[in-house]
Length: 253
Image (cartoon, rainbow, N blue to C red; front, side, top):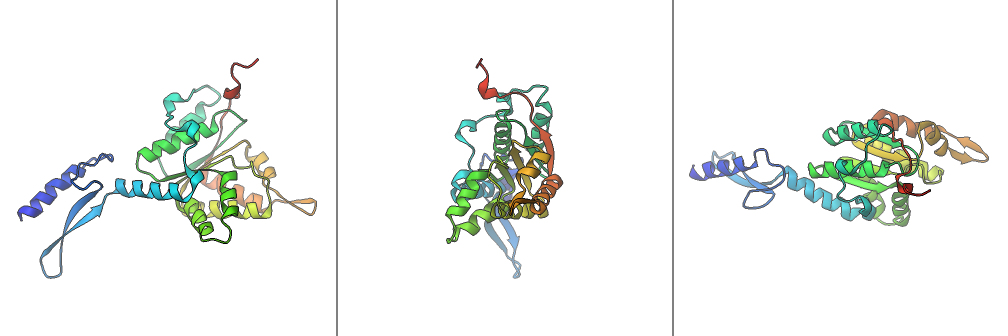
């Protein structure tokens, strides 16, 4: 009985834990449960924070391009310059950090801070123990192409399809083909069906993105796949423009 009391007292250390583990075995806690014979059995259980941490390590190893770009590592909303042109996007970003049931398409001209905003959201969610994959869409396609004929193809697709939060950066940058359309749809359709948060950045709004993702077929445009992709995006994402000028060009005449 004294051992049970000790275990229950140690379990109290997990109350309101934010990931700074105070257990003797970091990331694990003891659980007491009765057996069919009327005795009690003690087992060690992996906590949610440690599980999320291990999952993040696994995801980062699976896809090299799945990490936060070095230029944005460690950035927070305090580093993001808010203006009237991007205020709505910043408010949506704050909502995305706190909630998990819907994503966003951040679109706008080059240099307005779309990727930075998405990277900030991704890092804030990681701090909350949520597994995130951040991937440039052109790089993701390159990884898939390079992995053909190996077991890694299925691993890559499974990872981007199933991660709790996916940041898909620069959608529309890749020239559309039937194969590219199939990859985009496979990823977004799975995530939409399973209500997984997806954050997308693009230089193109919905109308321009629809044209950009139309597959050229014998001199004509086949937009069936494009419409299917856009339908999934609209169903799972807030559509918000990130306005303003190119901050990279500030200071140039």
